[in-house]
Image 1: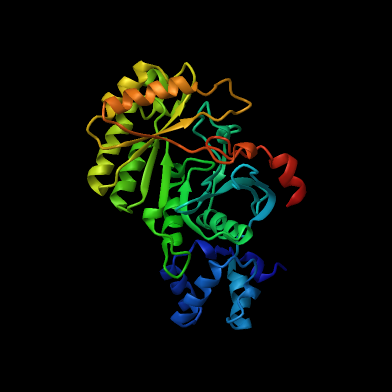
Image 2 (image 1 turned 120 degrees about the horizontal axis):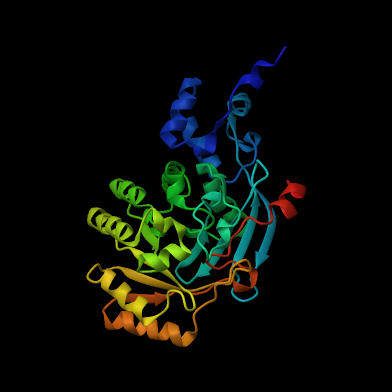
Length: 356
């Protein structure tokens, strides 16, 4: 006869918001203060309910019966000898792997987190999309990257960028729940204005995000001002062309009042000509937007190469002459492939199968 407990479908406890956790524990006959105690433990990096030392043993047993805990393992950790950037390869509970990066800045420590295992967007310059998308990450699995990176590195993380593996708005509900969880005052309590979300421009999801008015920073991976160029390097442009993306960005700004940052990887002889600079200036004129130029990072499977320094300088000059606010993104962790577009999941077979 099958054990009754084996028929119970366990719930992902770390993905529950405080009010949801309180409701679950109330149904189990527990007072409200217990949910606050449990929630604090969940943000501390415990790997077992038995580590909740101020929770009665009987309740710990009940929690283990009805809930499960996510807890990634460090499959590989690389530390840049150049700038101290740390890249983690995390092993998830199901044997999949993702990467996240911890970076040190003068204004605080920032973590770049992944939102999916793999990515379906197919951008020609990005290693994260090689092999496609496997699955969405749970809210808890995104949160774990922050919690366990903080524990392992010893760094207090104050800023988050959702710019790792995956398209965050393609995992909309789980990402929004992660944002609410990481913002909770009884949890990590990281403010929305310290969080940036990067998207390739899923227009209707940008509109949906705008309605929530979360006050985070929205970064849009534009990478070309015209449809011909953008479609060649970003297949998603077939569904969401440049004008459609920019229209959703204007609506986002009107709704939230938050300035949008446009990411633009400088690719040699592809999107770096004076024509592209002038058209980009025209498209963004009067929007108050910010252009964040990125020196293309080499990906071994790609034939694309970074623009020359002279080309980048000319591109910047044209933008500034048209009153476009532009900066160049600082490159961190280049010796450990931790820069933009270099996070990947290719180590699944080599590392995860034998280590998890």
